[in-house]
Structure formats: C-alpha cells, structure tokens
Amino acid sequence: MISINDAAAAFAVYDPAKKIAHDSKLVSFKLFNKNFDSFRTDYLYVGKISNLPPLQNIKGKVSFLLLADAELPAVLHSSHLINYILLEPGHGLEDIINNLQDLFAVREYIGESGKKLLQALAEGKNIQEILNISYEILGNPVMLTDATHHLLAHAGWDETLDEPEWQHYLKYGYVSDRLALAVGNDLSFRQEMTSHIVRPVIIQYENIHKHPQIVSRVYANGINIAYLSILAANKPFSSADLELASMISEVASVIMQHSQDKLVVANTPVESFIIELLKNNYDEKYIEEKTSNFQLNFFNDICLIYLHAGEIFDSAEKMFFVKTLMQNFFVGSISVIYKGNVLVVTECEKNNRYLLPQNKLESFISLLKTHSLYAGISRRFNSLTEIQLHYDQAVNALKTGRHLQHPGPLFYYEDYFLHYLVDSILEHDNLKNICHPRVLEIILRDKEKSSNYAVSLYTYLQHNGDIQATAQAMHLHYNTMKYRLQKISEMLEADLNDNNTMLKCKLTFLALENYHRISFVDYFQKVKIPEETPYLI
View 1: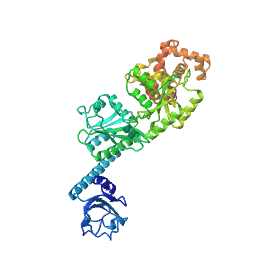
View 2 (view 1 turned 30 degrees about the horizontal axis):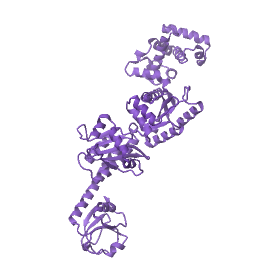
View 3 (view 1 turned 180 degrees about the vertical axis):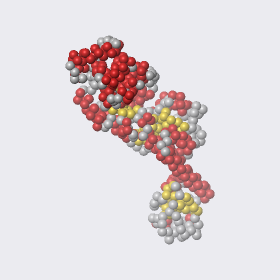
View 4 (view 1 turned 60 degrees about the horizontal axis):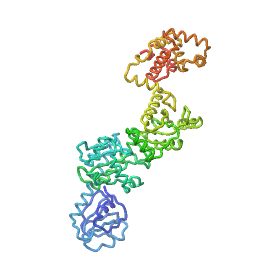
C-alpha cells in the first residue's frame, strides 16, 4: 500500500503539476477509459485527459495520474474529492505504467519486510537473528555497533569482504583511527547524527571506503544507543534501502532497550573515553594524554560505583533515569551506561572508609533504597589506567554480596575480598578441600547435641579475636566465653591465638556461606535436623 503523496514523490522527476486534496491510501492502479462509471478510493487511475469519463457525478474520493494531452477539466480544479498528478505531454504511458508497477512492488516488498521484522520481534529474536533477517531483506552486508562504535553483531560478510574498514571491525571490534578522524572532520554527517530528525545517511569517504554505506541511528529517548551500517557490496542501494534501514533500526532499538548486556551509552566525549578504557587496553602514555586533554584532574582518590537494579533495568528509559539520578547526586562525576548497568566514576573523601561524609552516605543509601538499587563499590585508586581492575572489583563486590543474600544496598569490595577469593577457589575445587575438617566436626557435634561451639567460634572470628566483644555479642560472661574458647581450641587441636589457625577457620566459614548462600548464623538457627545440614556434604 502507498499513499498519493508517495506516488507524487515517485514521479517528482517528471516535474508534475498536482492537487492533493486528501491523502488517500492506494493498494493498486488501473487504466481508465471514457466508459468508467465508478471509482474506488484506494486505486490510482491512470490515463490521458482525453480519455477521462464524465466526472460531474463523482460521489466519493478518487485519485488520478494524468497525461496532459488535452485541457484539464474544470471539475478537477474545483472538486475537493479529486486528487490528481498531471504529467506534461511527451511521456510514454508504457514508461509510466512500468514505474507504477515498480513503485507498488517496492512498497509491497517493504511492507512484507516490515511484517517479517515485526514477527521476529514478537517471537523474541535476538539482535544477531534480526541482523540475519536484515541481510536476507537487504541483500547487502550489515553490522551493528554500540554508541561508542564497538562491534556488537554482523551478518552477510566475513574476512573475504573487500572493505578494509569493515575488516578492521572484524579484527579489532572497533572503529579505525582514520575512519574516526574522517567522521570527526565531516561536520554535516555529525550534525545528522545529533539531529532530532532521525534518518539514515549514505556516506563514502575517499581513500577509505571502497563502497557506499548507509548509517542509521538506533535511537531511544533522545539518545543514540547504537548504529546500523549497511554496505553496498553486493548491489547498489535503492530508495527502499533507506526506509528499510530505518525500520531495522527501530526493531533493534526495541530489542536493545530490553537487552541489558547490549546497552552501552555515552553522551559526551569524556563518557566515550571511559567506555573505551573499560573495553580496551591502552598504554599509560595514551591514557595520561587523553586525561589531560579532557582536563580530568582528580584532587582526591577516585572509586568506581557499579549500580544494579535487577528487574527495574528492563528498559533504556529506566537506565537513563538512574544515570541522570547519579549525575545529580555525584556532582562532577562521570556516569555511563555500560553493559546495561550504570557506572559512576567519582572522587572519594580523604581518609574516609565509606568514601562519603556520613550525612551524604546516609542520603545515598536512602536514594538507593527508594529506587530499589544496589551498588558495588571498588577500592580507591588514583589513575584511570586502573579502571578495568576496579570495575571488576565493584562488580564482584555486588555479585558476592547479593549471592550471600546480604541486604545491602552498598557492597564494598574491601568487605567482600576474602569472599571473592574463596568463591574463585570454589569454582575450581571441592568445598571440603577448603574447609578445616575439625570445624566441620564441631558443626556436626553442635547439631547432634544442640550446643553452640561453632557459632561461638564464628562470632569470635567476626570480632577479630576480641574475647570481650565476642562475649558481649553472645550475651555471655567474659570468663564463660574464655572457657568456651578453650574447649573449642581442644576440639580443633590447635591454638586459637595462632594466625594460621584463625585464617583456616575463617576461610571455612566463608566457604560454607558462599556455597550455601546464607550466613552461617542464620543457617545454624534455622536448620535443626543434622541430616538436613548441607555443610557436612
């Protein structure tokens, strides 16, 4: 189906006169003659003015494509029911019919392609599957890059494609320096890519591209979240390709907004730089030079905050909201969306274990709870050369804390370092190889006799060997606690004042907690039957 305006645009090269009184939708066309006495609203009627039937009795809307071989009847000017496109004499009717057939065929193909894409979307196809379908539709290679021009997916090409820039993407996964420079110098292209009018653009840079390519923005909530590129490697572009590019980009936008691991968003050059550092390894000189260019002068230590919200990050809009929330809270910080989560690089307060003054820390915790957010916080660092390491720290802190079902909402890597270490060991080793066998025997004895030596040892370790603090936590007299620890020492056949013994016991409890995803005290209080204790597996 096309509109009368589509038809007028298709014949614009003929420089026609026209009058469009209503934007009719057209399903087909038909040649008219003098004997016609009825017309359909959804047809375009084609022929010479001299072959027009009487028009005075027309009761409904009708559209004409006319060859001017006679004077135009006055009723065509005056009637509000009639559209017409008028071509000057000298154009062959056969050429016009062929052009119309092509126009309707293309529109039908675009319509069928749109149905295919929507069906794929409804079936929950992923980005790669959408690109595979897009390649079938377009007949030319396609690729999708994120907002920082890193390759996400591609279809219809491999290392045999004769296009150096695309081969660079295939090899390295990101844009080449010379193409980045060419784009930076192309003011009109950059204006198109930042305009509120979102439409595909055809580019071909001399000495860089061997083929023209279409670049189409994948857009959401006023932000470019990705770029779709189509290369005219197999066949020249047609007018339909631009429309299909927009259609594919819209489908990609819907999928990416609901695909956390694909969404990478940078609104400024500084944010792009941060994401570059997270994705790639650069030498220290390059990073220092860029840091200087962007005037990223940190007067204090910095830390990385990794924000996660589980189900609430089910759309780009929610991530943009959280990103803005963090920018407003941490004034002067750098916030980005990376792999579907919000990251904040911010300065820390000096000599403050919690990174923020107490009043601001309480406000931050309140803000996180209000929006059901959790935050993993890295150790302090003072150079962006270490950002990948500290990103991993923040992610692992949050992952470990949530794994242990700790309430949060703040998870400091410093608090979870040993948990993370034990968890890494558990990925490659058996639980019993980490646990002190005597500690497991104490747990079993407590289960059988309803005693609490294991919890006493656990609490003692939690208080770093402070007997007085342990006694207070367990509501016991100091001497009672001291006697109990002596008994535990006998059961362990080791001295509790020995650092090596303390570490072995501590690692045992950490391993048990990590393995069973519950704190040791909670488990011990909730499970009363010895056979139910997975600690003794």
